[in-house]
Image 1 (spheres, each protein chain N blue to C red):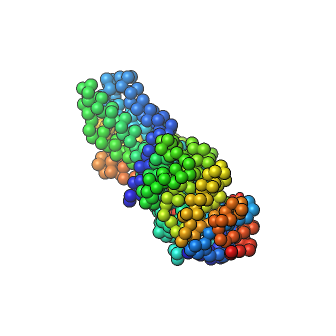
Image 2: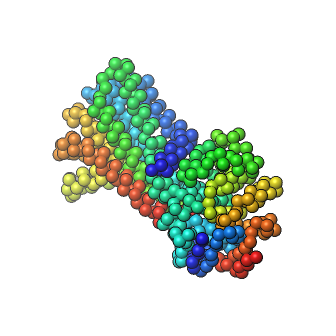
Image 3: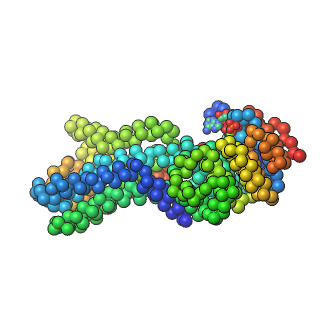
Length: 212
Length: 275
Ligand SMILES: Nc1ncnc2c1ncn2[C@@H]1O[C@H](COP(=O)(O)OP(=O)(O)OP(=O)(O)O)[C@@H](O)[C@H]1O
Ligand SMILES: [Mg+2]
């Protein structure tokens, strides 16, 4: 489903990804690990089509995520490492997503509820005024409500309390079937039940690749 | 198209809530209110009176402040969203870059254009209510001029915002462009003219590449040339091309310039990384 062919990404003289090759297929749940600055976020952004690569290409179901971004992104749910300071209020953000990505608003609310986030009390609040954990809960709820074949999470649990983490893993467990789940994490023990493949990155390269 | 409207609509809503928009609307609304309080419509100076005089003063001030307002508030729109990782999230949904960019411009255009027009409409309504004659041709010309002016500077601002990195640099460029178009070109041309070595037509041509100068000339183009105090450029232009040709030019050329800059901005946006 996701094919990463020999990609290299440099920022100035710094090489963030060096000749990365990998493939992620249906029913795989991958824990992507590695030290800070190893290149995990850079790899994920390359898959999302955000970077113009110095070499190689990414193909998602055979499509290029830069040139055919609309087609590709229809099938991806994504939660970034840091929730951005979006100024839209919650209602508007949900409108943005429901119109552009055809996601049911009620379903977003349902998952927010499951994540113990009270959306109705915050509809008119700007997104950036929510607490860090609330932001992550909302982004997670949106990612679950969006019907996708590929779910990409860049450390979405950093700000969540333990209870919320459990909720999140439970919901994800129900949701990962027939999909690719790509999960950046520093805590393997937490996602052990969830993943069936581990990838380690170091200095812009993929080290071992264990399947189990 | 659906996504373009969506983005324009949400950007518009977001802008209207912003503090700068409040200041912006108050400035233009306040300007009109001030004119009425000061009794501009009642005075008779140099042959034009009533509403046409008020509108002329309004547009002359607007030519100076609208560009800097637009530049300052817009010059970081794209690059700011890129640096704060807003693009990373907002563009993780199936929206084309084209729809996003042009949607943002459309929303921003409506935000900056409506208050200046609205203030003018209120002036006309209030003036008519007080019994003044409405100078329709001037009114419609100014609607067009303001449209073109908003487009020009919005285009330039989006162009800058597509590549500039820090907000300090962005603001610096914005100020420079503004003061350059407002004064530097004129000063340079005046000194050239005084040396009397350069052809007059060439000087006029150069000064008219400057959209700000075009707007200045357009603002007084409907007034009787005998009565108005106009600069040499305006006199030369209005003397050598017909009024209607000039009016089309004065709206068409800046509009095209704005679109061109916006288009180049889009090309850069497309070529650059989104985070
Ligand atoms: N926009 C950028 N400009 C310059 N360098 C960058 C940029 N983005 C990432 N880098 C560099 O690329 C390298 C990899 O960064 P990346 O964000 O992919 O790391 P990461 O594995 O996600 O780390 P973390 O666990 O801290 O999130 C780092 O050395 C970082 O400084
Ligand atoms: Mg990271």
